[in-house]
Amino acid sequence: MEKIENVNKTLGNGNIRKIFIGTGIAFIITLISLLIISIILTFTNVSENIITVSVIVISAFSIFIGSIISATKLNKNGILNGSFVGAIYMITIYLLSSIFVSGFNMNIQAILMIVISIFAGMTGGIIGVNMHK
Image (cartoon, rainbow, N blue to C red):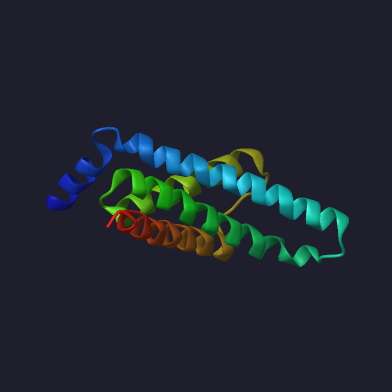
C-alpha cells in the first residue's frame, strides 16, 4: 500500500506535467539525432548495419537527458520519475509503431530497447535529483 501512495505522490501536484516535459525533450533529442544519422547515412559510405544500434543508443541517450531534466525539476524520486520518462517514451514509440508499421511485432531487440530505455531513465533520474545536492 505504501508503494501505491508513493506513486500517487509522485504523479500529483503537477509532477506528471514535468515528466511529460522530460519525455518531450527526449523525443526532440531523438528526432534531431536521427535526422543527423540519416544525413550521415545518405551522404557517406557508412554501412546501414549501424541503424539498429544507433536507434537504441540515441533513444537511451535521449531518455537519459529527458530524465535528468525532469528529475531536476521534480527534485525527488529520481528512479521512479526517470523510469516514467522511459516508460512513456517507449509506450509512445511502440503504439506509433504498431499503428504505422505493417508487420510490427515484439522481438528480442524490442525487449532489449525497453529494458535499456527504462534503465537509462532511472539512471538519468538519479543524476537529475542529485544535481541539486
